[in-house]
Image (cartoon, rainbow, N blue to C red):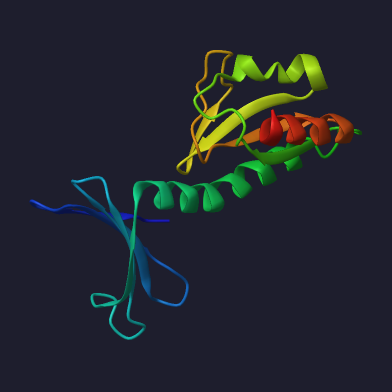
Length: 157
């Protein structure tokens, strides 16, 4: 998909692309760190029909919602031939501002965190020093039992 990047001098950057209906959808990233989700009119792709201001945290959450399922789906397809192995995306709420090593997840569950999705960006193969932040989603691979326990640990400690 072709993403058009348009510098907005003194404001920030606009990034958008055409969707199947002919509308354009995108994001304006402001210099002050805020974001705006934008969508063009159906009959005029150069005119904005809707815009939604987003805080950095809201933009990160939306990006995670859009990006994490694709990563999990890809990993699930890759593990489809391996009986007993499952991939899930799990919110990391109990370990914000703590490291992956603090979870002792692999030791406690046999499951492994293979990536962390933060603000729509995947951080593959995080090491034990990886520092979790609010809104992170862990992509975890393991058995069904291991993933159930991992979910309990990552959300409850």
